[in-house]
Length: 286
Image (cartoon, rainbow, N blue to C red):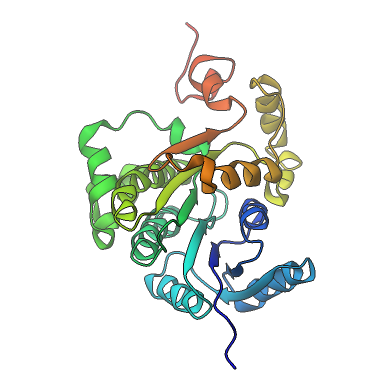
């Protein structure tokens, strides 16, 4: 006898924030966990199974449409897809410009497009973006429209996304995260036709193993100074991100879609208007 179908949660990118979200929204559902290798994905799934979750692992390169389609096919083997968590990506210190744009910008856009075709009525999705997208200066109507509406297979051909125009991996990351927010806005219209919602969150410094390494690495002094000068005066936790998304995916947030929640302890406010203005390129008090 075949196993009864369950609602399915897709976790694409099983880092600390993604797992914290999944733990809040996947109870009683089947959780499909992805990582770059099947072995790592299955190790994470096994850990979740030990904690009582019904989980399985599958390999996925977020920057590959073929892999995303394979994840969707795997999810549909278990039942309707009711929740999607896009928490994958690479940071400015982990990859060159082209890879950041391929994974964080193009890949997240493909995920929104493909999962938007199959998300169950009443379902919801989240893209974990970053405060970095809010530190990019205003792009103007033309670039905003291009990032939001250009067909996914043409995104990486946009003239302002060439490596010589981008310049640095940090700026590539900022463009990718700004694109995440804009693609969520445009995708909300398509998801809404399926009676589903989608939104993004833009975390600041959240205590994960990567953040811990940064705080205790060569750039640690700069990070610690940022934490001291921002309004919250501390890093966030993955549990706070999980609680936020659980609310957004729940019934009390049913009127929320197509928007971004900046959850950074006020560091972006301080970057533009407060004690972190020194981080702005070329900024001077004089």
